[in-house]
Length: 400
Picture 1 (cartoon, helix red, strand yellow):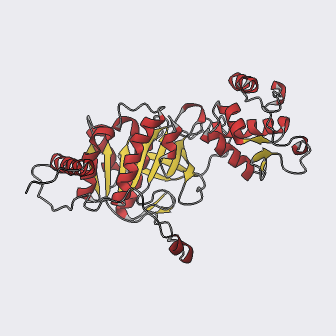
Picture 2: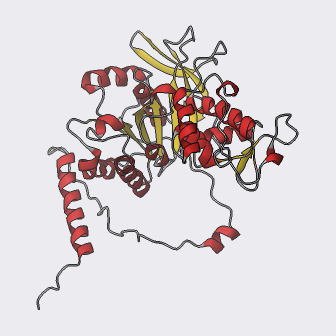
């Protein structure tokens, strides 16, 4: 009897399994003993799955199963972004060391487990120095040097390593070096680079630290907002340029935490003494702050515009401040403005000054924003941080 021809889905699944088998052979050294591994896709999840809402309503949700408290969660990607030289790799290795020991990390408890680090940044010599200085617990760290590796082309190699070593934490250092052809400002490419990693860690139920670079001008991370949208938790590591201890002191601040409320910023100190590297909690720097972040600037500018123009929509504020109607940093700024009591959001979705504020003009407009009313904010009424580019954006919106 002739075998019926394969469907497209069957052919793709057969090819995927063949790629995984080949990747496993390439990833595992020839001298390593053979180990039995179940097929990674023996039971493929359906593309659309109806969830049991009745069960969800009748039972309490499970607590967040933190791998490292308020930092990493099994099946989720945590991004640590920072400018060059801030110590992202050192911080990630300190977290890996704490997980290996089952110790605390910057005051955050860790569930003990194995860690797999894939490093395309530092090289073997620097990795040797750091691992030796950190006091890593034997048999808890698998350290892989990546050269010529690409997440977009070689994901099967990474999945084979994860399946082989079964880490509780996966560290990828860094997004830029592990995706050399990525255009970070292209949302489609950014999405395609990070989503497969998210799928991989969910499938293997391990936590993931993804290291990335921060943008200029106070942005939490560099590149398209699709990068931030594709991770569950996000932190920025930075130093205050006015801090007299800026050589060793950093602030780790959270800008996204899908599983829980965003944790408070943590101050930390990175030191090296006689080959011993330590990352510990530090006293906060309370001196004169550095330049405001982009989010802080947007808070001030949004309040100034609403003060001048009255109730205004999210899209209009975002378009005026960032040049596009759905900028995530503007939305985050508006949330902070509401949480801080500087603005309120009406039932109609308009941002306005709190009731009773001496400059409240919510009674002068209906559903119109300042663009719809044909008015342009006066430059002298805006904060001193408003740029000429933004004023040009206001005029362009008014002329539409």
